Length: 378
Image (cartoon, rainbow, N blue to C red; front, side):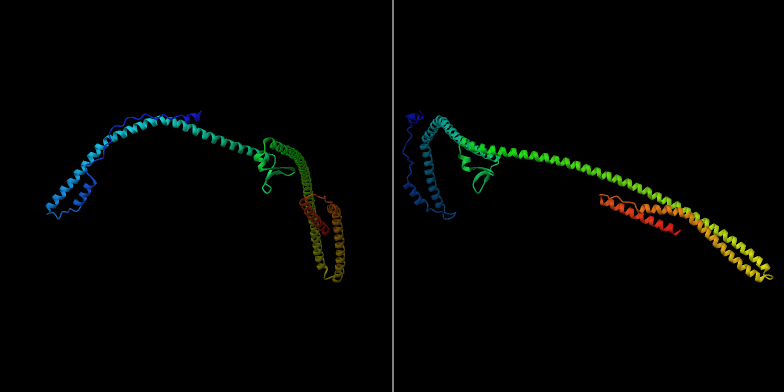
C-alpha cells in the first residue's frame, strides 16, 4: 500500500504567470567607455594650488564619471524593480508550498523516528533481557555455591561433578540449564541442611559446654569460698589462741614478777634482820671485847658458822618454795608448748594461703620456744 503511494504520479504545481520584466541589461555605458575614462582620466594631475586649469579639468572629469555611475545605479534599480517583485513572488510561493509539504515530511519523519526508536528499544530490551537472564543464571549458580574457575573457564563446585561454561550460561536453553541448576541447587540444599545440622549440633555442644563450665565455675567458686571461710575461721581461732597465750604469758609474767618481788622483800627483811643482829652482836662484842676477846673470837666464828648454816637453810627453803610454785606452771607451759609444736597443719589447695599458714605457724612455734626458754630460765 505504501509502495503504491510512492509510485503514484506527482502532480505538478500550476505555474503562475511570470511578469514580462526580462529586458536587456543596457546601462548606456560600455566597457569601452570605461577604458577610455581610465586612459583619459587616470593620468590627470593638479600641479599645486595655483593649477586652476588642472583642477577644473579633474573636476569636470570626476563629474562625468559620477554622472555615469549615478546613471548606472538608476538604470540598475529600474532593471531590478521587476526582478525584486518576481523574487518576492517566488519566495511567497515557495513558502506556501513548503507549508504544505513540511507537515507531511514531519509526519513521515516522526514515523521513521518512532520506528528507529522502537527498533532501538526492542534491541535494548532484548539485550537487557539477555543480560538479566545471564545475571539471573550467574546469581543462581553463585547462590547454589558454584564458583568461577578462571583457569578452566567454568563454574564448578567441590564435591559435585557438574561443570557449566560461560557459553552454557549465555546460550543454553532454559530447560537444559534448569536441569543442571536443579542438580546443583539440590546438592547445595543438602549441603546447607548438613551445615545447619552441624551448626545446630555445634551450638548445642557449645551451650552444653557453657553450662558445664558455668557449673564448674560455681563449684570452684563455692569451694574457694568454703576454703576462704575455713581459713578465716582458722585464722580467727589462731588469733584467739594467740591472744589467749599472750594473756597467759602476761599473767605468768605478772605472777613471776610478784613472786620475785616477794623474794626480794624477804631477802631485804632477812638482810635487815641479819644486819640488825650483826650490829647488836658487834655492840655486845665490843662491850665484852676487853674481858672475853678469845671467847668472843670463838663465839664469832661459831656465830658465823651458824649464820652461814642458817642462811643456807633459808636459801634452800626459799628456793624450794620458789621451785614448788614454779613447777606447776612450768608443767602447764611445757604441755602448751608441746601442744603447739605438735599441731598438724592442714594441706591447703592454694599456695598463697598455704604460705600464709606456714609463716604464721613458724612465728607461733618460735614464740612458744622463746616462752619455753624464758620459763626454763626462771
